[in-house]
Amino acid sequence: NAGVTQTPKFRVLKTGQSMTLLCAQDMNHEYMYWYRQDPGMGLRLIHYSVGEGTTAKGEVPDGYNVSRLKKQNFLLGLESAAPSQTSVYFCASSYFGTPDTQYFGPGTRLTVL
Amino acid sequence: KNEVEQSPQNLTAQEGEFITINCSYSVGISALHWLQQHPGGGIVSLFMLSSGKKKHGRLIATINIQEKHSSLHITASHPRDSAVYICAVGEGNTPLVFGKGTRLSVIA
Image (cartoon, rainbow over the protein chains, first blue to last red):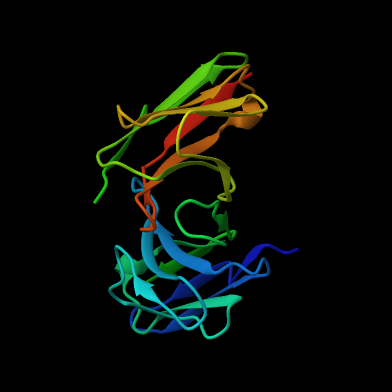
């Protein structure tokens, strides 16, 4: 099993450009999450999904959109990137919700110039 | 929203020392997680607790529900334990809230 994979691993964008981050899991997990990690701050939840076709906002959803068209994939989109979105993005998945172990992807380091 | 505080923020220890990292939270929870973030950035789950104590190798995690407090202990610490240790809590099935992490350096 590959576990949780993220594509790409690194990306540099200019302000105003758009991009999509892909998260894929092969563990048949229902729950998937997108987090961002910034220096001096804990992981913060952007959006999450409790199953195929569902999405919900987390703590910091502004400027991001997500889609979960297939159970194994969770996409995070930035429509018009801003320097404030420079961060490391982690995807995670779990079979159940809070009372279950989350498995994390390796992260995507995004820089917006 | 639950507030999660970890202490200390940074910790340096000599190899072989017994290490304790603390986590306090403000609102009753259904689950508390301890995670480890390696220097390369990868994050792995160490424990999930709802009560009592769990042990895995040299790692021990305890939780006191009444005091809203958890501790992560590392016995016989080793340089490979150097990492950031993160506490996260959740109520019911709401998403986890994460602490800022404790950066541990173990020196040989």
